[in-house]
Length: 455
Image (cartoon, rainbow, N blue to C red):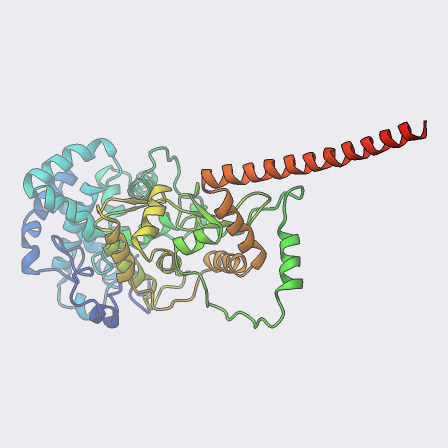
């Protein structure tokens, strides 16, 4: 590692000044209880946990020699410093910087470590020292873009702790533990075996915890946004034909990126229902168009909304706007899509009742305020959300589908409307039958009378 060239752009970026200026009244980019890495090191308000860090080192290494750990961290200090801005790391000697990395990494590994059996005792000891409130806020501070420790430091300590210098098993176990921890934290699924759908052998090693968090919640491929049609009951071709033949005249072309729909309530009024996606990923957004006797369906991933959700999304958006970030801005695209859907408390209520939003904030209004506070800076959309929004727009602009939706809403959503409609149909049928038989009865009588007269 020591001989590798430093990054052209440091891997550990800071929040862009524009974003920080726009959110100067909030502390969503600032640690509340703990500094991890050099960017917030030495702040007075973080001294309480800083004083606990030497104890955290002892808790992690157990009876092993701390000098061995320090020497190993020192041997890669130049490489590790290249992850951060030089104007920050130049303020610290190699010794101070290595000590910082050791203590911060041990604190993280006590919180999320490779051995689950060790976590409960460490959690109890940490809470006894720091208290529950401070302990829970450590997780919040791990979400911050400017509060990250390089992942290779965590792996080095795990190898030294478990004597696996020539075996990567524990390093892989550490990554899987963090993935599973993050997956359950966001999607609340206890029946998870392997949260990563992608091939890990084809992926670059993660830079830090925030990147692991992002990988897990956007795992999976951008599948097609529409389900293959059943030819026996698919009516979309017929609907499209009616729309193009009867209603397309004089209609100008749609401009890319402009959408008419504004909210869950709006889409619901146009015949689009909602349900929780079976895909445990932010990419699990699917739109299935109208089929015979069915409304269109929009599937959205079920997601926990907690007191830390806003902090997480704000820092993840800042991370996806970092100069060295080259992947699709999938989290930003998801937030942008949800901002279109969640406009009022009524929208949140609908998604909450469908188990798409699991609201731990208490009031639905707080979820609306959360999404309103997130700025996506008009980022370019990723392919999956673009396709879904385009198909929704086609449905929304279809006159025939709107009539079908109105018919279903007026006559099939309300049980009394259904009863009235069925009653009207039955009455109409009875009237037709009565008219038919009345006519035939008259005809028979005439014939009978004529026959009698002839005789």
